Image (cartoon, rainbow, N blue to C red):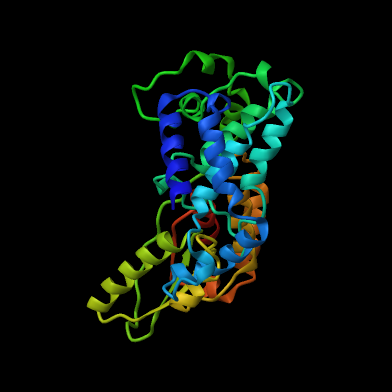
Length: 325
């Protein structure tokens, strides 16, 4: 599709130049408007409903012809910055916030879920960092706010490659809020003591081993579970596997593809809370411990499990270990 190719090329050139998004220029803004203009909200809604089935190999219906979820979000991203000089920063921040807002644990999945591995140059982290930066300029004119690039914001937080240096525009940006949030999480985690591992053995290998896998992503759940099951087969050991917490890429996919349909509502609550607060954490250890305690105390499957394989988020694995050992 020519509109996606033009947008991709212009976006890549601009991101490589490491200047702020407001300086993108008319060529890029026009390419974004052209690409986004082809897909009205109704058509996008239909495409999003049909895309999961297509990705799972059930065929691509005509409604998906030419649809590019990541490209659409990149187009909408640039349109957030195509504003008059006297527009308030609040409008830009609100526009960026709309790109990553909404349910992340329901069927209305966000199109940026795979952005970090996408060839498109705009990632979900870039959107969130720029949203926070423009929120600090909410009451000021856009032309009075520092037009900082996403790469510079990543550098400020130590999220880019070593050797990269901040541009002059980035000196106007301070990450005190992000630093405070990171320090808060570090303090919370430092108070959690790790218990020494306990020895484990089984007396009856004819009875299936009861395995529970907990994690937020289908891949990070299924890969270690499959590896463990394959090793167990070499030992003539059967495994009864239950998987909890999967929200990515879609909650229903692990059930439809692999038959793992069980849910623990408290595990879902804990994973959902951490996913929603991924870039602006405000959870408290006591709150998360309460949720995980309810997850264990209310679930016979968890209570009777002989092995718990926890993949992510890390803090759930850390706290759950303290509860079950």
